[in-house]
Image (cartoon, rainbow, N blue to C red; front, top):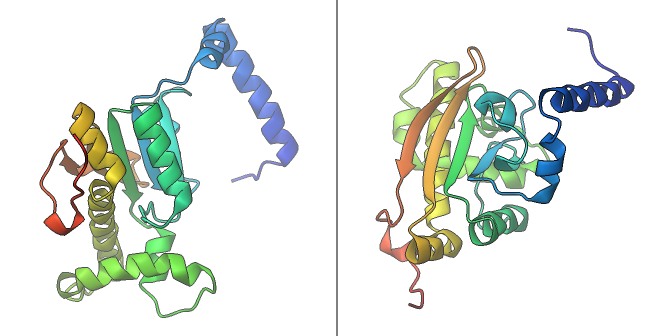
Length: 213
């Protein structure tokens, strides 16, 4: 595959904008007036999994946060800030955590190699592995084990969302958003549902907040 230069990216942008206006002359005028997405996408930083591309949506339809291995870490102020804005200001209706098979972050967390500062981030994935060790250690095929950890990780991150006061408050005040765990297979480009959590879904009581009426 031929690598594009940075100049080509700018040229591609001009062609894209021109094509958009040719199809819909008022597209950008509408876009600048408001941001009103229904979805928050929490995905992996992997360049092969762009939210708008794989869901067939236009700019303005999905609010996006991406990080290595699509983690929801309660001490990550970047993630928490995005979550709060999406839930409390944009009033999004659905939050999607999307992982993908063959995830480099997942594979790195399964090794004993030290990656410097990245170790602190991968520690969150190692904790997921530890939680599901009995089932994962029974899998001998490395790719199958990695894929299973990818799935476990998505489900754990959905649970992490439900354990935030931001989501719990929104559930109480407006019966939303719904939480979804999806997986993406790069080989065929298809998304699959792993789990979903409706508003006020039961969670472990230790993570439940007493919020004012």
